[in-house]
Amino acid sequence: MKIHFSNVNFSSSSGPNTFGSRLANELTKKGHQIVNQNEDYEVFLCFIEPASSPRPGSKFIHRLDGIWFKPEEYHTHNKWIKWSYENADHVIWQSNFDKQMTLKHWGKPKKGSIIHNGIDVKKFNQLHPDVEKIKNRFDRIFVCSASWHRQKRLKENVLLYKSIKKENDVLLVLGKNPDYIERGDNIFYLGHLPHEICLQIYSVANWFIHLAWLDHCPNVVIEAMSQGCPVICTDMGGTKEIVKNNGIVITEDNPYNFELTDYDKPYDLNIDTSVFTLNKKEVLFNLNIEKVANQYIEVFNESFCFSP
Image 1 (tube, rainbow, N blue to C red):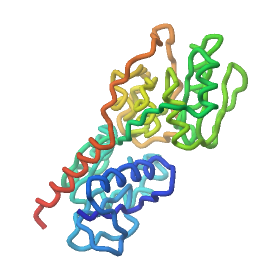
Image 2: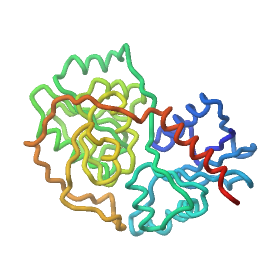
Image 3: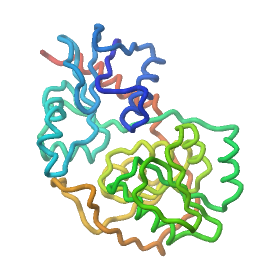
Image 4: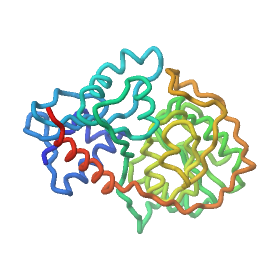
């Protein structure tokens, strides 16, 4: 099968593009061809919104990455996302959170499925020397990672760590543009690192903290879980769907009913850390990229049954 990935930059390290690269590589392993927009293809797989028009006769699959739900952005930023949602033969939501959001605002698409993101499960026989030093120096390693902005709640991640840390614990903050800086207490800001190094850090970490508000299906959480690292998150958004019992899910005080809101103004968190049991948990990871790719292939094949 020939597949065109529309609006995917395979050289970018952003969340959607990283997952797009992983999916394309796995589809290629399975004998499918990834082609450009000028070649013939059977499947037009659009990430978020199309970068070109689907070829006549191809099947239009829309991989939805969530919608813009700040009130001032809703109409302007969603124009082509909504067009794709309404015209695609099949919509793929990356979480039930995304599905419920779009059903509320845009109604039902022609057909749709929830398929979470995935990753290769990679084990490391040898660690980078710097990661080995971190592993040997500290008793417990906490880590968080994002392209930071207020929705990701870096401040709350740091404050949670400070409330539960012991003398020889550490918090490693990965990712660009941290919007909250606090020194001391063994908090280190490591910036943007290659995926390989991030995965190694997750493999030696005791806990991954991700208190982001209304996040969709964060790749960083999937990456951490693939390395056996349990996750602390909240119940607002799609993160809890992939964490399930593989960590701690904190109940927020303010429910969210999919109304338009400024997601960069999250509510305050009131966390009772006295109820935390921070023994290392065994993570049952089931989001291998091969399984995820097979689910995409099922959608591609099913879409060919549609009537024009």
